[in-house]
Image 1 (cartoon, rainbow, N blue to C red):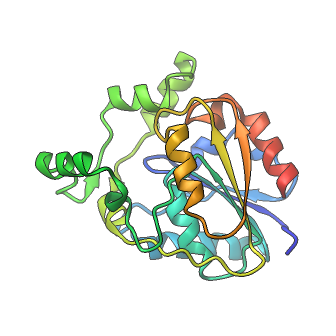
Image 2: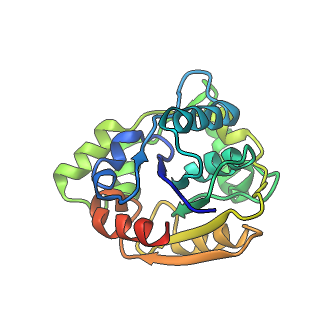
Length: 225
């Protein structure tokens, strides 16, 4: 299936703003939709992606899924009409597993003890976000990221994710080499959970490569599409 567009999917606590430097560098028509925050579920997110695609007239776009958007992309795939998915430092649980279910047991027990997410929202403390997401960003970019982060609905993180990749859909995984949020070792494990053949690509940088390496990331997308 030949791709006729690109859909950039933001990860957890991010929004379409994170793709502002990649979007104008793409060769194919491209959009970066914001996923709904109210009453968020994986179904709602996949529906929002399909509706955004429908408004463009794209028939076979490539999804580019950063970080937690791996969940969104996998859920969207089951509806068909997608030429491929490029996962960028993306989180990929095992088939039928949730994001929280994927966490190492000590971290999961700590989450429960602290009551994180009991109000239905998970918030990354600013010092943690600075350490994990902004360690290789200049100060102005770090402030931009930190000031725009939002809470994450925990119901999405608790939902099981199914791997339903239709025949003919191409998959790629971009490994970010200095990532602290999704470490290189974790990325290798995530990519290995995909059952279909996966093209492995490499990009020097931390988790926020859409800011630190927009030209290089856009180049990978353009070449792969």
